[in-house]
Length: 282
Ligand SMILES: [Ca+2]
Image 1 (cartoon, helix red, strand yellow):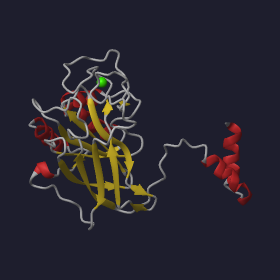
Image 2 (cartoon, helix red, strand yellow; image 1 turned 60 degrees about the vertical axis):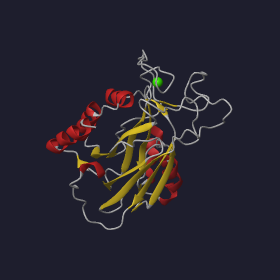
Image 3 (spheres, rainbow, N blue to C red; image 1 turned 60 degrees about the horizontal axis):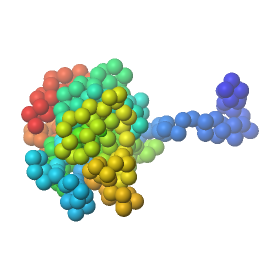
Image 4 (spheres, rainbow, N blue to C red; image 1 turned 180 degrees about the vertical axis):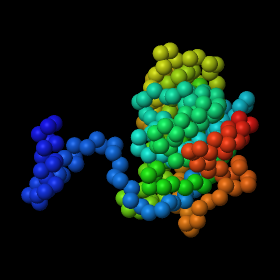
């Protein structure tokens, strides 16, 4: 390691050491995003589309009490040293409560603390619940170079602890903002409740498991609602499209919260509190 660092230092003064520089660069962890040098900020629209139909997912498709639907979308813009949730890592208490019950209070508090303590979160915003398996919703938000990553989480309703979402999608591409991204979404298990089916009663996972992707063959148990042994892959259960909006003016808070409600973190406790009230009311 010392040798490597020594080579890195020397390489700064010599063209001959260019290869060494490249060699050093290649030793960086793969998850490090290139620095975002895009100027100003960019405005985007996040459009969520449920694809959870009875045709695509016939097994145990929830028709009543409640029928298949989605929770509100909780989304965060942040830097690379923060994750609201991560595959193969343990879910936070806030993610647990949200994935199991759709309760956002603790999750919002966790995000707020991350914004205050490590300055890694710029903003949190939400879109209201999508009240059918194939419904749509959208919300506008803005990003800045220092916090160019987008993450979000949407609970699958009903379910034990299942959700869809995105972890750390970078909207910046070097010196410019990406125009549009679309991603198919697949179910994740928060690792906190061991229910097998959409309508399973509460059954805490002890000890807690990590967040895992649910597939047509995992968990490998015939009772699981997503277990389709004849399918190689599950069809996407939702899709998200993120589109850069024209214009560059700072978006003001809309009067009608349910459509869009970007709430900058920082010291905006009052705004966040009203956000909490809004979320609690849904
Ligand atoms: Ca589970």
